[in-house]
Image 1 (spheres, rainbow, N blue to C red):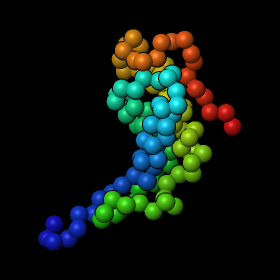
Image 2 (tube, one colour):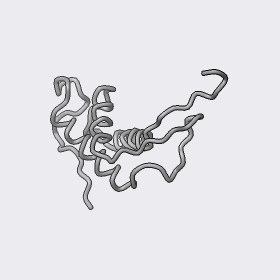
Image 3 (cartoon, one colour):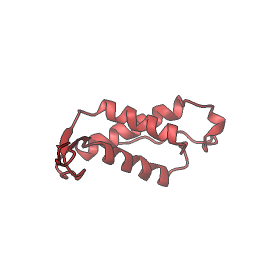
Length: 107
């Protein structure tokens, strides 16, 4: 790169989505915590949110970038419920025992 700092394209919503997924998982036993389910939920949520990309040389992001938190919360909860209903593995592998329904976001 000829002495230049390596700039990267970042998704402003990625860290917010992953943070919220971790928060939901820490507060609820209703969802599988395996990396595949976590990543599936993140991918689904990011695909439903408007794209917010920016270029940064150092990986730091401005807090103003990205979707509003309410949109992120809705996307994460919807994606986690969808992954709960249709995981990419047998439901017996998840930590969910089937006794409770997935959480939902009430507005």
